[in-house]
Image (cartoon, rainbow, N blue to C red; front, top):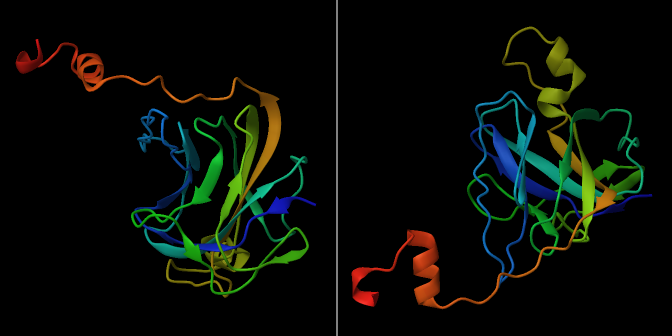
Length: 201
């Protein structure tokens, strides 16, 4: 049985929402800007997994899970939308986020996945920073429901709202990320600007 977070609720905007690793003090922030000029359903950048929606705006339930199995669907009604690889870049604390409003809130009802009822709460898990993970993103309901695909017209609605489960499975190891070495303001300016400002030379 996978270890599952609580069920959060994300406000999807601009056709996507992130599952991201929480930045830790002492670590250098990574450039996590995604390239949306791709048809991939899921985009991986350092520190974030970007899940793309077929809807411009949506409200969806989401849960994160850790599992030793890579071939286990959360249930018969779930569709696999992507499989990717993720390498932790900080300390491995992962959480679901709204597109623009920070960490996801709590879902308003339980989410059924892997044969159990996932209670509402924080959609967050902890990964081992020294591991590499295969990630499977599953979806159901909303646009992914069979009645939506089979309906005539874009205004057709599914009775079940959109839900996602993001499953992390250990697949290898890496050197655990370490905090950046302390540097003075003078050293940081020289590194980021290529040279010191005139008033510091």
